Amino acid sequence: MKTIKFQYEQTSLISDHELTEIGATLRPEIERLQEARTQGYATDYASINVVDDAAMHKQIKKAVQEKLALQPTVLVVVGIGGSHLGTAAVHEALFGKFYNEQNPSIKVYFADTVDTDYIYDIILLVEQAIEKEQHVIINVISKSGTTTETIANFELFLYLLQHYRGIDYHQYVVVTTDENSPLWYLAEEKKLTRLAVPKKVGGRYSVFSAVSLFPLALLGVDIDQLLAGARAVVAGAITPAMVTNMSAVSAAILYGNYKKNITIHDTFLFSVDLENVGKWYRQLLGESIGKEHNRWGEKVNSGITPTVSIGSTDLHSVGQLYLGGPYDKFTSFITVQQSKSNIVVPHLHEFEQLVAHIQGKRLSLIMDAILQGVYRAYKKNKRPFVSIVLPEKSAYYIGQLLQFKMIETIYLGYLLAINPFDQPQVELYKKETREILAHE
Image (cartoon, rainbow, N blue to C red; front, side):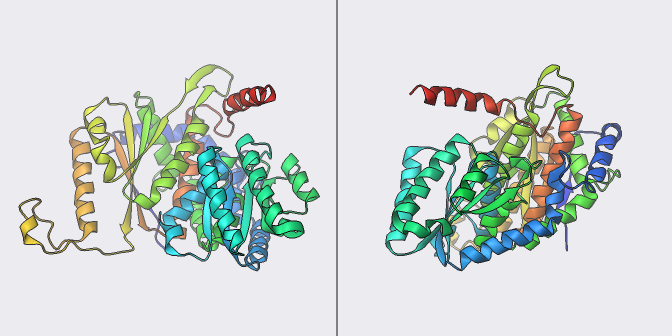
């Protein structure tokens, strides 16, 4: 099988000498990841081992088969942040934005906010399905089991199931959470199917655990291929040889640019179907790297601001800023080599005077010309970038991409001397929210 291509020579604006120096700094962390591969779920690096957890994968597949036996036509994924973004990223990358409109066997809705109008619309769609005597699966995902938005939405959909399904409602619910969380025990009490998230695997690193594997497998994603792609990256990502370790090189390039006051990282995706991959990475980078204190407790307010752009759409919204604005941005272009379709612009010669040289040409060729034009413009303007090329949009290569980015983030956290696994400031709004609700 092929691997994704990571190209950075002459465009990252980090010299070979700088990469060598940063690589030497990174070596102890690479060695720690090597050790972690033999330590299961005992360390903060536990996420790199979920891809090899055969017992977990067997349990997930068993739950999938049990729920498919109910012949569901709708899946509602109730979660937020890391409990939702990975699933949405993989699903949309493989099935596209119009999945629900193309008559799939199982439609999917993501309840990832407490926006009342949005949730109301999903409830109406679910009610319509139930009233047609169709079956609905609710998959609630909360690592802590106490996430305000998730529990509020879960109550709504659980109430709906209880109202329509009666005493057998529990068959249609799957709870994914930490063992021993309050939600875990509630699920046990109500006889709901439970899937455990390993304790040391944080939400934003959990895409290869039950958090995403259960809903994705239920929807028809080949999770074996997804995991195989992830496994293919791990070996190269924990080698000290920087030449073959693209996660380490990518982290070194981001760090090198950060030290030059380039503090914005734009993921520019030249595939609309990968937009949610960009949003998944936005959380991964933002929550992992944005920290008030370093590992020694010193106040540093460290962080790289992640943004997401879509090609070629956003060349006409923020392209001017990226090429003409401040030199504070680093870009990772992500492209797909082989498209699923082959659309050709018709030969309408009267349009030649409007835009020359596009008649009878494939849209993919036009997009590639635009991309090459963007690369040239970035080079001439000395805007640092790298390019990541997927051979195609398949579970195997999406698995590679996500694993590459998670390990990159771990290395970047080490270089920045912060903890990439915690999120203390996220708890601040949660605490304030609970206090406000308590007095309402």
